[in-house]
Image (tube, rainbow, N blue to C red; front, side, top):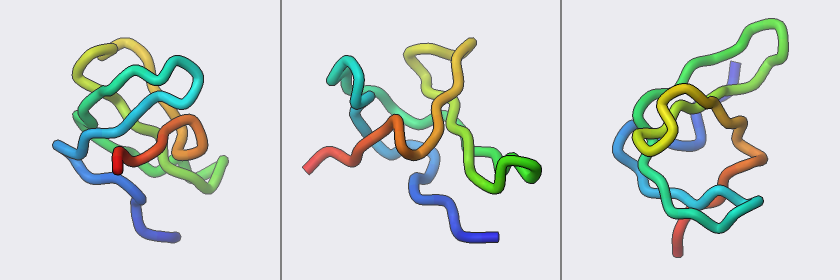
Length: 56
C-alpha cells in the first residue's frame, strides 16, 4: 500500500472545477488500491487522487 498523497488540512484544487477545497480525511480503498478523500466543502462527496491537484 502506498502512502496517501494528501493529508488532513491540506488545501487542494478539484481539477474539474478549479475549486479550492480542504482535505477533511483520507481513506484507503483496498479493492481499488487507491485513496479516496473527503473535503470540508463537500462532505457527502469523495474524490480520488487523480481528481485533485495540490495548490502551488
